[in-house]
Image 1: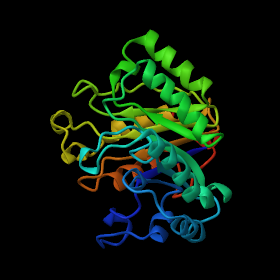
Image 2 (image 1 turned 60 degrees about the horizontal axis):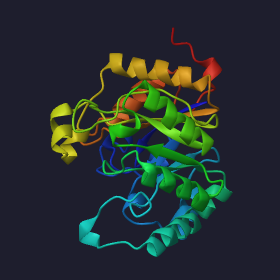
Image 3 (image 1 turned 120 degrees about the horizontal axis):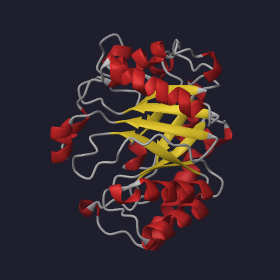
Amino acid sequence: MIKVGLTTWTDHPLLSNGKQKATLAEYTGSFPVVEVDSAFYSVPKAEWAQKWVAETPADFQFVVKANYVMTKTPMPRLGTVTEEQRLARFVELQTALAPLRTAGKLLAVLFQFPPSFRCNQESIQYLKTVRAQMGDWPIAVEFRNRSWLDGSELQRDTAAFLRSLRMSEVVVDEPHAAANGIPFTPIVTNRKLAFLRLHGQNATEWAKGTRERYRYHYSDAELQHFAETAQTLAQQAQTVVVIFNNNTGHDAAPNALTLQRMLHQRGRAQPAEQLNLF
């Protein structure tokens, strides 16, 4: 099963007849999965998760970002974080997302680690801590430091380690030659879920680290490549999720809808064996 979606459901005028903000109901008419990135900054309330369950179709699913405290992302303006506070944030997020998980609507918790999260013994041990704290919750991991994937041997070692932790390694598309970017490396480390996250190829702004780095419109040729990659991964994983994060210029929705058409989907996910790309 291949599922295509976007980061957030609101900032997509194409889905809301030109209105500035789309509703969750409008979003679910086009896509079967969404990424909730606001949880990275503030853990949502359990009442919100209950509302999302009630407002979405039975087969609709959510990817929810782990809070910045849980990914050791530096936020100097918010003060320092103790280890006790960090571990408490795991409990807080799990409590908030319990309604999604109970309803079978939580596809994964996405741990997007910062560029400062290098491949070393401390980080390796922390990933073990993440699994211990999350129990059997579904986890996807996105690295933003190339030390995890610098060379084929290290790529294999990282994949094997994540496989041992039952974590899905996120396949990212970004300008990997700029600002310590991660190369596009299709891989499956968890047979339950493969994950593609597409940030665009705005190399100039990516190197600067500005919000404009997500302003990018994928060409049909690039989207065809992603379609073929997703189909290949679908032969190894039960579910493949493709999330578009190239939305500074509102390009995510049109790009995602085009990818769905290439996958012969109409707003809902289709079994991978029904696809015919070649």
